[in-house]
Picture (cartoon, rainbow, N blue to C red):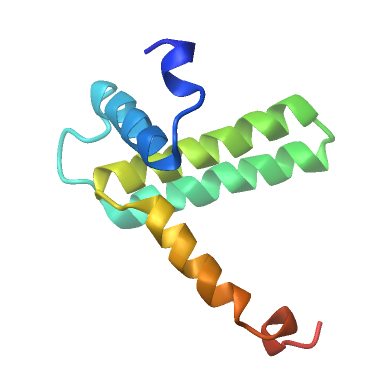
Length: 104
């Protein structure tokens, strides 16, 4: 897949692209363990935190990208319309109280 095919895609298109690549690389050869997939997403965030702690900006950005790639792959594999889910959740969040009523 070329750079041009990825840039400018909607989130749902990116989800399908990330999923297609993951399938090509063998990550979906058997039924996907959703818990494992979620923990791999968390692991990418932990790696981003470690890069941030070491002030490694390039690696920080790369780990954030890895997080999105794994998350979008999961959405693509589960046929989740992530654009619609984000839209619906944003509508609910807009109507929530300031800081969701929490004292911070």
